[in-house]
Image (tube, rainbow over all chains, first blue to last red; front, side, top):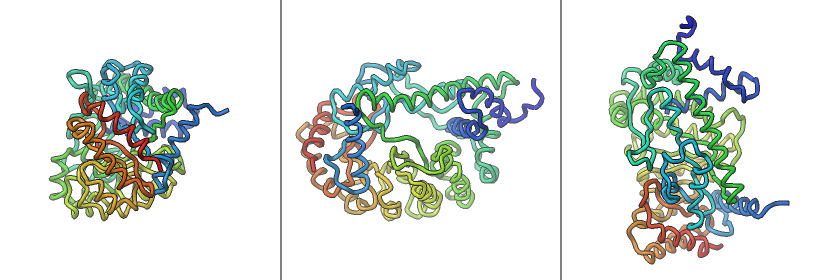
Length: 42
Length: 387
């Protein structure tokens, strides 16, 4: 087990690497993940 | 050169946006509000189209062969169940017969957790609610990450499906899918996804201050979901707001707990240039004063249980109206009775614009309407409702 994975948020941070279809821009990737988190909230 | 379908699409959009701001278009627009009913009409079930976009889009458009419409509220299934199933949980599931997608209420937030929610709603949801809701996230690393990646893949497919279904409607049928995003009232978010119906009804009495603060804390999150990274909004396509709780609230409860945060969301959306289609679910007759406080010409209000003639008189100058006939009448009345009703509605509601003809509720289950009646009234409104 990876030691620094202690929160759900940190799991979402790791997903940024998966978003290769988006421009390599942090704000865009965070915006996309925000939509994903919101969908999971529902 | 502009194709016939492109022209048809533009005409239909113009019809809807013109009447939305209380101007008379060329015809009364007809809006088709249906989800899984479309699939049944085409002879398939919700489970059959899972992973088959072409079949899903084709099936959603099949009713256009029979009924007249100028736009649709929904152009594909609005849930992707695998997003939730990948994580071992979630509230959405196929009905036993595979025909519809249903929702079960779960309560994952306890009544004493409002302070944590108010401090950071999204952080609280992620770190406290998600592990309760999604068992796969509690597995050791990297199993939990793999589950989240699978869910992300389903989410990406879902977004792709939403975009492509709109394109398919436009390119193959010249049909506008009039909604580009969904907003919600903060109170409904807490009820639907955190505390449940019974929980929030208790909280209204025992924890009104915390509940109001929690609603307020959700306003920036709601705006972020509506804006999707944009600094301004287009007036078309519309933001869809389905409003769930108000029909169960007293005027005082609505005024104190529902309206303040929702009003902020509405006005911020309007200030950014957006416009909305708002489903006033159930009976809003005790809340018309608040509807008259909506920004003028900002919204199309979908009328469900209210009397559309009274509604036209009382709120019809502030909001455009969508409605006119209820599903039960289309299901059980004769064709002539349906046509007589619709003629009265058009005669009363259409002058001056601000009126779209639609059913009172979305068509979901097989048998929700008698298709012959539905076809007759949509065709009648289009031809008779010429300005």
